[in-house]
Image 1 (cartoon, rainbow, N blue to C red):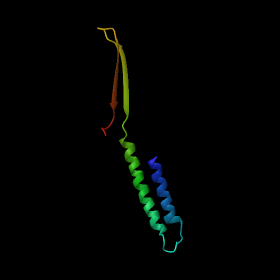
Image 2 (image 1 turned 120 degrees about the horizontal axis):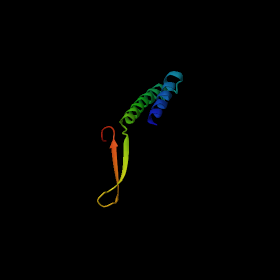
Image 3 (image 1 turned 90 degrees about the vertical axis):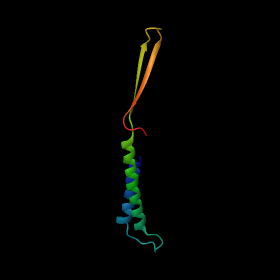
Image 4 (image 1 turned 60 degrees about the horizontal axis):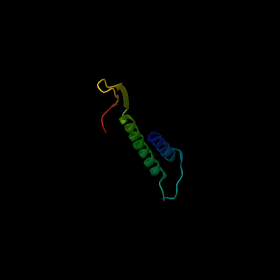
Length: 86
């Protein structure tokens, strides 16, 4: 979701900078707002990429067997993760 948000911010900023050409009487600089939105879009996009690559995959394996000594049913759950712990 943050990757899409970054792209949207960048596009809106680019539209403000390059496509619109009007002046609000010195009250607000539309180009500056556009550049700020473009910068924020790039930052949000990069954060989204970093978060996507840092996600870990977890695999849970469940094994069921019978204990030969007592005859009781035994279930063993093992969870393995890929990547560094966060």
